[in-house]
Length: 72
Image (cartoon, rainbow, N blue to C red; front, side, top):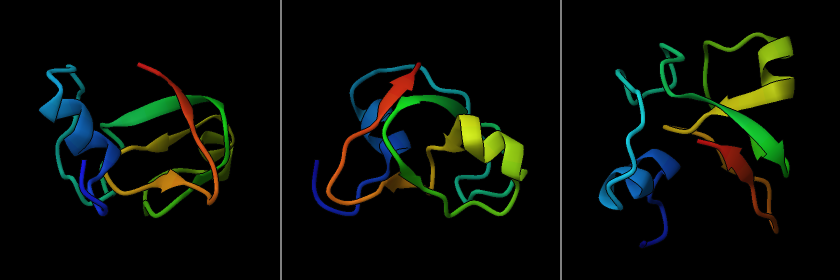
């Protein structure tokens, strides 16, 4: 995928079903549990407790240089 592609868009392009709605980090519909790695949170809807466990894959990504293991 080209740089700047969201995790959500990459999953959709690879025929992975993901629940989503706003694609702006406002609704939390694409909230996904993070099993490993450190996300950079760019959403505006998650609580601190939710951010400890997961991320909104429509607007957030892995902290550099890193990888994320997500529960899909």
